[in-house]
Length: 104
View 1: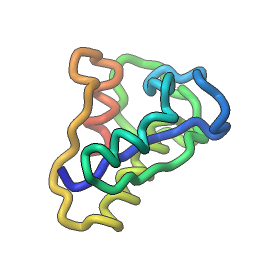
View 2 (view 1 turned 90 degrees about the vertical axis):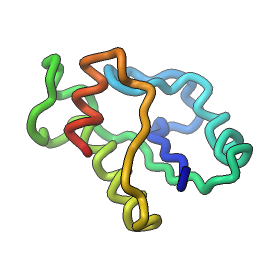
View 3 (view 1 turned 120 degrees about the vertical axis):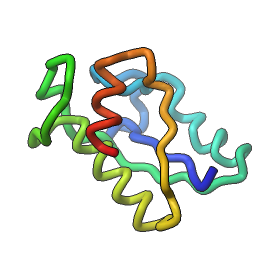
View 4 (view 1 turned 180 degrees about the horizontal axis):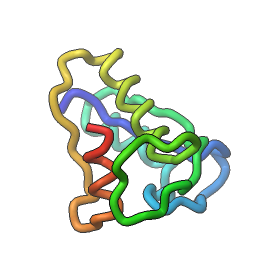
């Protein structure tokens, strides 16, 4: 494990955001989880929304929240060039899985 990456709500005080792809409940605990794991945290605020709501995400869509994930992963690669893989809890959701796959 090289680092933890987190897309946080733009409003840090918000407990839940309207996102089709990303969970935000208890996002305030993410820094503590990274600390417990002994890895640095790379974080970025979500700015997009669920522009492309189709089941399979196939191409970049301006303003889509998936493009925030792509930018976050670019931040990770810049900070940690040795990163070779991404692990995500989105494996049982086709909607989420195809979006992670589109970024990787």
